[in-house]
Image (tube, rainbow, N blue to C red; front, side, top):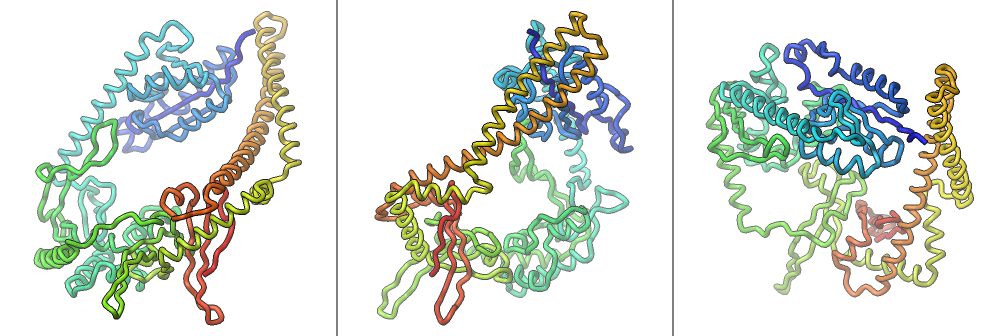
Length: 550
């Protein structure tokens, strides 16, 4: 019986595939073999001529061939893993990618391991044929094209920087790109006024955190929010607060005194996009290419204040990882809690060191946003230890009862419904297999001449529509069963782990990492003259199991 191939058509168009004149006029070049629509049309015809089933089309428009983290490409791999497609079809090898090593890994290892046949139409390459000798050579040439293109782009950008042209996507806060020449910066009067105020406050001796607090209390938009207001119509997802770090960055940048520094960072290579900072000898520095916001004297005076502040911190104990670092979360703003080691001195001359946790947003905003949510580490230790021991004891006494109770926390959990779903899955699998066999038989009948072309097309279309509908329903049910079974297995894993900690001699980081996902810390309140603070412990695998109140 002829194997039924469910083809996944992959199309990609990079911005680099268009000529510069075409990019400027915002249209796809006339090369019909390159555009997304023409790739799709060519490949659809190829599928039909070979008697394959066109299952899905995956498109990545505007993605580089050197980047394999493309949404369409990743979706195609996921469908291949699930068995929805067993053939991957591209117009030519460069559409798959231009990185020689990665292309080779996918064609030689990944696709075969997924049971996928790979076909490149214009290259006449087929992983099931005997014409794969040229595959690696063509891939190497595509990789060379990518490296050559990267070198040319870097050379052009370097020349622009040397000539003083501004080439970044956005101007620094306080400036905007000129509407007449995008390679020039001009003052943004509102943001420049905020920058001047920040420098004035610093000259008065105001700390970074205090400056951030003043700006937040006055509802001054943060740099990210301010830029978003002019550059995007989508919902703003950037940090909406002025922070200690944002203020410090503005108070250290030479751009505000009229000095432009470029070429201070770059990437390791055309294949590695990790940003690295270059030695100062490679920096490109230009003076007076744009209007200064502060005078050089003001900038120098602020640097002396900044340097004095940094010297005061010399000799302080470096931050160390505390017992609950990364585990405590503010219950109101959901930011991680900061930790600080403090000293309490007593009247008899003795002292005690202790760890204090407080809201990260409260700290970064100069105490102007959220509230402290402060709590002692020893208080958290006691609460967590007590709750772990209580749950461990419950599991030891009656593990079945605990597991069943936790199962009901799973969304839509119903034992009877789960049995019905599994029965429906079995029926759907049988029907999908029957339809695939029927389609394969229709192809045989078509080639033998026992079924006419018109009858063949009608029957194949009808069967394929039903098969796709059944397969889609099957995927939904399999996903639901898989989720439920994973959550049930997670509950049993949690029960097995927590049983080990019936008697905790000392709570350490190993126990916390093994059991705790995160802990939400509420603000301390006074109720009926009593201090109260809500602590919610969320365990790994099972989420919240109980509450504790102080």
